Image (cartoon, rainbow, N blue to C red):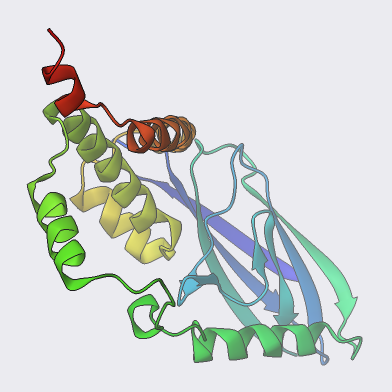
Length: 228
């Protein structure tokens, strides 16, 4: 098994693009194991939001055809180094089921998400009087999020959207996203989104508790007005 690699960096972003060209001069198909050596997780090419066959966060494992070649590419949120990738000949192919696993994964990619859209599934619930529903709807329409909270949520949403674009991105689309958007440092974005998730969980728990307490409040306005 013979291989060559090359790396490219994105200006202004801590991301390295790695390309590996693998050649199999033998007359039989052979398995190859490609391991990332950079200080960061692999961002593999994706199909329908799922890593392409053979890929995981550490690298790639698959087959190079007899007397053929295979070119692979991935991104990594880390600076380049002298040896960015390791290529190991894992021996001749066999029928131990690994290819069958890849076939099942391919089928999942082709079929997509089997779940119906959430708005297409009727949800059971209590019968609500028409007047009560109208009043509740009116309250929802008049309710507003305080400006300070809205500003924070907007900033969080912006970071999450930028992270989502990179989460399911192929090498090419990740490059385009990083070049066309003000993503800043990818490692910093990852840390901030993780902190946002923790903060949102804490806020949601606190809001749920306060909502229950607010719903239980019943100030006796009329009785208090009659007090001398």
